[in-house]
Length: 282
Image 1: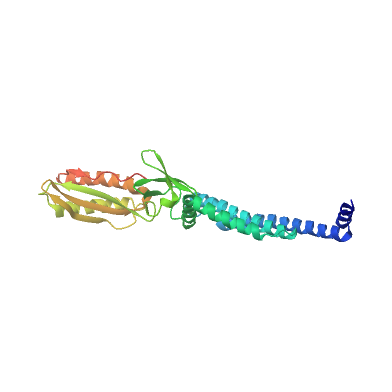
Image 2: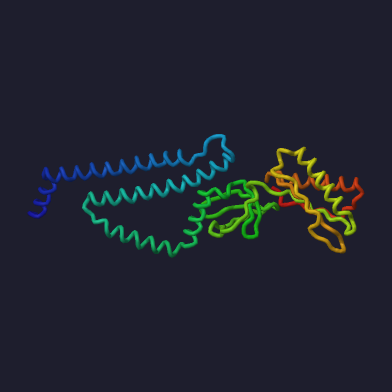
């Protein structure tokens, strides 16, 4: 009874009450500061990552910004929570060293057990940060070609031309081709009889392509290129016509060029044995 009485007296003494109130105030201030830090960081990140209205690929940039912002919000939130927890423990005279050591050991264990997850997430973060791939781009990676429909931290989804949705872990996207950046060449390979006048055929291709380029000036991204002989055999000789165009118009450009080339050669009396097939539609 004496021990309990002395303990009650100590706990209700003015000094003890002041110490408890001081601790409660400090904890409340820490919690309030943590909440304010999270709110301010969220606003700052949203403002810093959001693209300016009217920029090119606004929707794709906004989608990427939202994904990055979500990740960074989580990182900042958990970091602030951890720091606030350590500060609160110190306020109530609890040694945080053991907590830090336990967190380090847990981090190592999680790292070993989720190497693939960590690899994919880190790759996805830098993929989003760099902007090398955006939703709507047509890419070729790992033998797969398709239009990008979704990019997350863990994986990227592309849809093949035939409709299948392919999911690729971001850690596997180490080398890829983006078919939607800069320009692409609209290529038409024409096969004529081996004894045809190749110089005349090349001149017809050049005139035909130049006239088409004038009609489609908004599509064209470079000068017309004609190779008068890319392959020859007893079965036929092949000429190649190439016109740099904006990626979105490549398929339509090749289709129009094939029609014009076929008609121009037919009018000139040059037999056409084959025309190149269409490129991957975009």
